[in-house]
Length: 231
Image 1: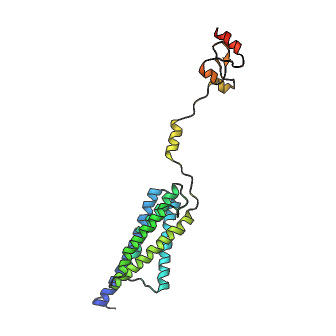
Image 2 (image 1 turned 45 degrees about the horizontal axis):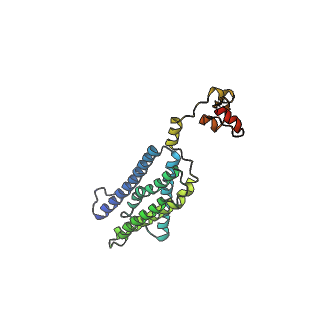
Image 3 (image 1 turned 180 degrees about the vertical axis):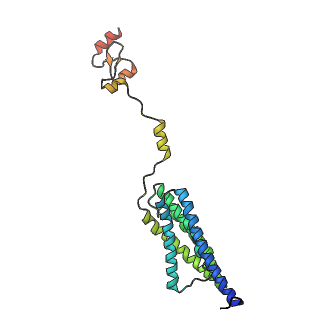
């Protein structure tokens, strides 16, 4: 209507439009970069999906909780959602890498405790912004705290259910030792099925078992014959 109009209302409207477009662009770039990096490192579409799915669920739960509590997205707190992608994806990567290594009891592992302690310390830092007197800063701290809580909830309870039983780990050491130490070839007599040759005793009689290994033929059941052999 008035393309040359200016003033505070126009500035606020254009600033809001710029922030909204920047939020969409930042979110798309963050998701694309995370997916590409995970695909290069993991080389598995299923594992990449397992990492991304809890993040998307946490975002939906955050938006739903905002609707329930009456909290609205504004230009100050909308930047919190892209920030949570970088923080939340690390928690999922820890569990997926443990699952690849053969660990199934995720909640009983030290990784789960480390994730909880790390999330609590980060949540305390974000919660301090919630107490700020500025309304915009307070809303951003509140949304960051809620988003991080939903992210940890999905990581601890949803992701282990999606992973399921861990696959059997295949170590490179086991494969290398199998190649380095091949089974010893059998002798010609063993391949034909004939008995192995027996070592002769001192008196010319064959000796079996441990007696052949010692090289001495002794017949304990015939002491007279033993004395004749020694004579």
